Length: 508
Image (cartoon, rainbow, N blue to C red; front, top):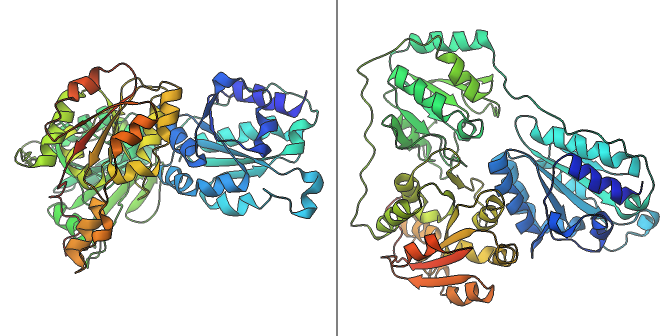
């Protein structure tokens, strides 16, 4: 069987379709046997990675990406880094120059592995058509083994034209239901003997279906539940009375938020910091960390499935009563941006939200809230992630809303072509504040320069129109919000917001 036929059959066996890609000449041999319905074309390499990221977030299975040689990998590095930070399963492929003249350093040749290997768990260049099937399967296993991660496979053009045996390997199953009963009992004994414990939940609580078990856990103990700073997905039901809100990504403020608690139980997450503060993070505090993504940065770590830990711990925990539950801050209806978020909350129940409103994101999280598979944000600091991610999510979910700022939208606006071409049901809200609001706020608080070069004005409606997406432009009252929600197919609403501030992350 010819190499490209093996490649196609292997992707079918591994259930890796659709492929998200932006191919070039070196990828044409890979695509020779792939049907058009199984390939989603993007107009920039990076958008392929962003869409695969979004799809994998919801399916919890590896997504397949096809990039163009070392240049396509280079174009996509920010998105590859973000997928690495998000800990999602993904297999990235790229065509490489024909080995038969590689001695001459031909155009499109280069050492891809050196560029990408830091952000992959498994990386391999196919040297023979006999390796295609087993390399794809190995990449699948590596990506789906906790903690989820990326794999890379390079395909020199000549290997796709070789003849080899097709083994018809089956799709692997990986069991991540890992728990240590002895460790569970030890942790529960420490919790039972503590004076005033609190819990921090992270992205793995939602990833592994642990939100319901977390609610039972918090109710039995009567303890507050905080969300990890910059959680890439909503880790808890934020309508629950035990939810104490998101921890800020600042050491000094984290210390203040957790000052009353003698034991911190961190489940399925980590402490993610952004601006520096003159404080030693949780110095001298007793911290227990449980999860499948263990960084070792803080606390004593236990490698267990967080959902399974929460479920099993209920057998050993002593019930507590009379603990004071924190009260979450009230919504300020006099705030322009908070009124917009209230409208979103009222009109898009049950939607999965990809958020890149940046300076307004704290209000979106506070007002719209979390539930299972309901809220996603890029936690790497990258700009331009949300729109491709929303498009990827829309390949498996018909109810996807992307909330994005005008600056972030312009990074990957060409995603709209893919959304329109494949009729992906993405609803898009663009918050137009005529500039980089988060940078203006940082400069306003910390520096004297007024930063006028951080302000710009773009005819956003014309941009959206040019891709054939139905769009309307409104003021802050969002009179067309019902039109957006009920519109058949993709649509966009642009809302002018002047001051999406109030959450001062950068206070000295």
